[in-house]
Length: 139
Image (cartoon, rainbow, N blue to C red; front, top):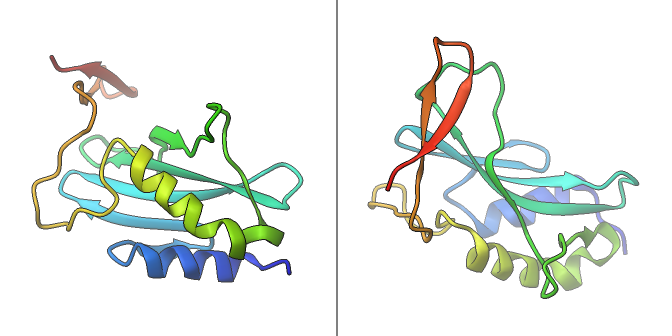
C-alpha cells in the first residue's frame, strides 16, 4: 500500500518527538545556535524519499533553511538509500535505525544536554564580509 507524505511525516515526527513538523517531509529542532533537521527528500519520480539529516546555522543571516552538513542515509554499499512510499511500512524502522547510526550529530540526545559530534572536526561558520556562509574546520 502506498502512503502519502502526511503519513510518512507523522511516522518520522512520532519517532523523533524532539523535532517539530515544520512542513510536510520536514522536521526541525533548535539546538542553541543551530537548527537540526531531518528532511525526507522526494526522488525525481516522486515515488520515494531520501532521509537526510542536516543543520542550519543561525549565527549568520541566511534567507532560507540551508542543508549544511547534509547527510543522506546510505545503504550497506555506500549508495544513497531511498525509501519507496509503497514500502514505507516495511522499511521505515530500518531507515530510522540507519539515520540514528549514521548521523554525525545525534538525533536522539535531548535538547538540554550537551551534544557533540561523532566526527573529530566540527565545521565552524564564518562570514566573508557578510557576503556568504563559509566553513572552516576547528582542530
